[in-house]
Image 1 (cartoon, rainbow, N blue to C red):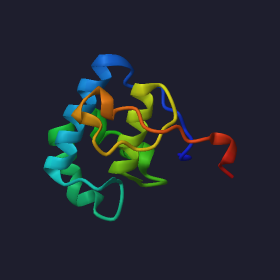
Image 2 (image 1 turned 180 degrees about the vertical axis):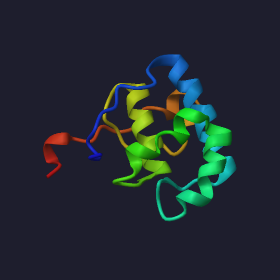
Image 3 (image 1 turned 90 degrees about the horizontal axis):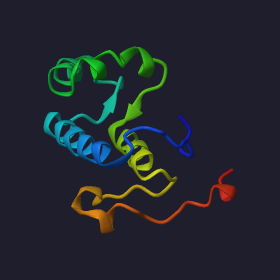
Image 4 (image 1 turned 60 degrees about the vertical axis):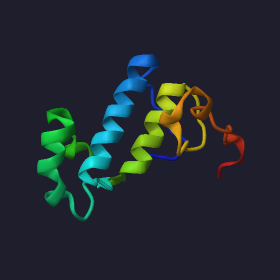
Length: 108
């Protein structure tokens, strides 16, 4: 997935709360990526803590692993409905959620 992809997922307040729960679970199990080098080691924890839908995503990530940080960045953009920089302190309140726009016309 290109870094300029805008995901139309997790919109609104419901998405924000789901994002918080998801990030907590990812941090708890120490997941660094989906279908990377240690996927088989992490897969049981992904299935147990993130749910069956995440466990079944293996077929989507099989061709190109994705880092957990990239995934959370895509979710941030989906919730905010805009392409923006990653917000490290995203869960610390509304004032931390919107970061600088990335001018897409300058991405080559």
